Length: 299
Image 1: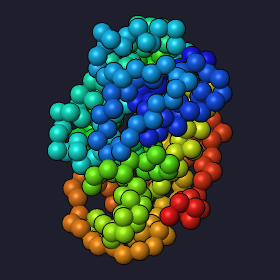
Image 2: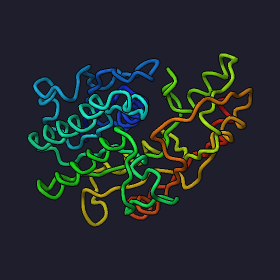
Image 3: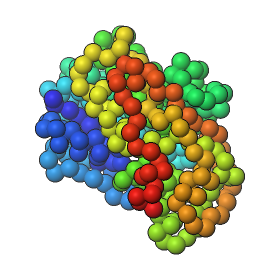
Image 4: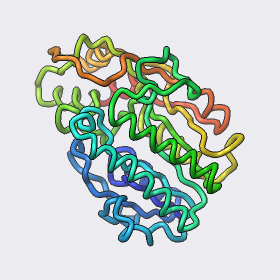
C-alpha cells in the first residue's frame, strides 16, 4: 500500500515507518522535528521524507495524493508543555488534525488512523478504562487530542472516511524521548541511571500507569492500516494498552538506584489501566511485551 505517516521521524512514528518499509510498502513521511523531548529524530532513508508542518497545507497537500492510508501521529504530545502553551496545543493537535483529515479527504485517501491518548479518561473514571466511558479532560493536551477524535468521528459520519482512533496508554521503548523534565518517565529514569543521578519521582510515586511497548503500538497501527473491514463502523475508538499497570515507584525499583521525590504536577491522572477487549475482538490484537522483561534487558 501507499502510506503517509505524519510525525514519522519521532518516537512511535519512526518505528511504524521502519515496519511499513520492511514490508515493502511505499511510505511518505511528514515531520517538522518540533518535539522538544526528542534527543534526535529518525528518518528512514528508504522512505520519502519531508521536513514540513502538517498545518502548512500549501506545501503538504500534494503528498496525500495517491495514498491508501494516512497514519496521523504528529502532535504536541506532552501534558505539561501543553499546559504552559495551550495555544500551541490547539494549533498542533486540533488544527493539525483538521488539516490532515481535510487534505486526506480532498486527495481521496481511503483511511486515516489517528493516534490519541488515554488521558481522555482523566480522574472521573474508575479503572480499567473502557472506550464508552465519559471523557474527563484535565489539561489542554487531552482536550485537543479528544477534539481530534471528534473530528475523526465527524469525517467518518459526514464524509464516509474510514477513520480509526487509538487511545495509547503510556508508550515506552527504544528511541523514547529522554530530553528535559517532561519526557516520559521511563526515558527520564534510564537517562538519570546512565548519568549516575537519582531518579526523580513526581509526587509520592504511587500513581500507576499502563505501560505499553512501542512495538505493540506499531502492531495495532499495522492492523488498522491493512485496509481490511474493521468492526461495525468507522470512527470508533480503541484502547491500546496491556491491561496491567505499575506504580512509578515500582518502575524505579525495577531499574534500581537512588531516587528523589519532586513536587506533584497538575492535570495528570492518578491511575491508567486499559481494557483492550475492543481491539482484541475487532482486530485480533494482543500486547506482547512485558515492562519487567524490557527493563531487565535495557536498564
